[in-house]
Length: 297
Length: 203
Image (cartoon, rainbow over all chains, first blue to last red):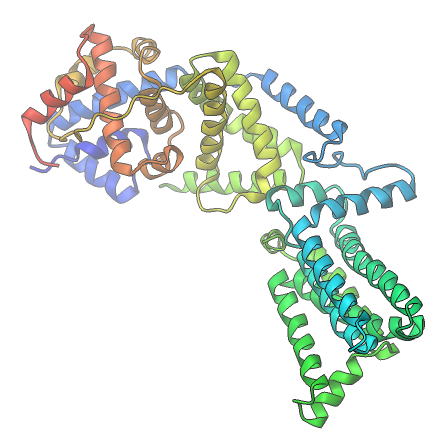
């Protein structure tokens, strides 16, 4: 006879699958030895359960206090205050929300963006290249990178929790502001320096990259929110590659013209970008939670 | 698994989602549902009620901060016990090197019930609970996870990060040690293993 000896503990614990439990029960009905064995396990189980005591409320009280303390301490690892936005004054609140986002965007993202941007500016400043086309290619790429990177922070587990007290829309908007704002600021300063160095008019340099930067940021943002950062970045990169190919004359006239039309600081480009941002923000709170959770991976 | 087990697991997942969204009352509900088994488990590992309560606090805080990282690869209960184990072992490590005895090298040959089943059948729950206090932590925890927490052998294996076969053999060793403690027999695991293996039998 085949004894289900190593299933008896699970049988007594009640954790076997229904089918296995039925087979064991059938065996027990005709095997005295196994019945005795099972009775032994049952006594063990009763002994284990007899050691259990009600979980004391004091543990909960201590945990509540520790959660509250971790908010009050303002440490980097602590989530923002439960149920309240940081700061009461509107300006303080805005600064607080933006500061949280700043921390959440991983330092690697900032590092990569800074390196690419500085390299681009250096290339634009070099005598051999004309500044405007270089900036038009480099700055939008950096912006798309920063915006997509803002959704894949260094500490995925904690991010959502840190961000929860503020509405999803506000958080997304704040993160977009931080990521693209930083790139905009750096690129604007770079353009100003280039223009002072005689590379061209400041307005012309700014116009060369502002429109495409807004468009690529919007594409990257919308797809990162609705789908995932990798998709946002990939599509933005695809647009960027098209633009590079068009500039090198490898595309046929029609496609090249379309890409060129997008790559301008013009009302249609800005309107398309604004529509994408608005759409992503509109649907963001209604996305199912696993999908929101996936924004971080 | 009957329907009520599945319902319990659904309720756990729902609560954890609420915790991830910042709902403290959901965390407290999870504590009410799993606190007793978790505390008993931590107590078994640390042999100190006060430290066990601290480890339980750490566990709840870790759940509060990490609820969003739960990946549905296990049941919530298994996940909770895994966190609890890490927190308890961390506290154990604070006090000095961890000495969890390794398993006896020989795997137990499962055969007909041994004499310890008879010894155990005579003991009442209070006596068994008392004898548990004298077990090695590695044996107490496998009993706690199987019968206290009600985890399957697979889930227990996941929490302990050992193969399922090891869970089964630890269970047998734990029961043999319990029976020895109850009968006052000072024998050790290797003797028990030889006694069992000598009888042979089929699995």
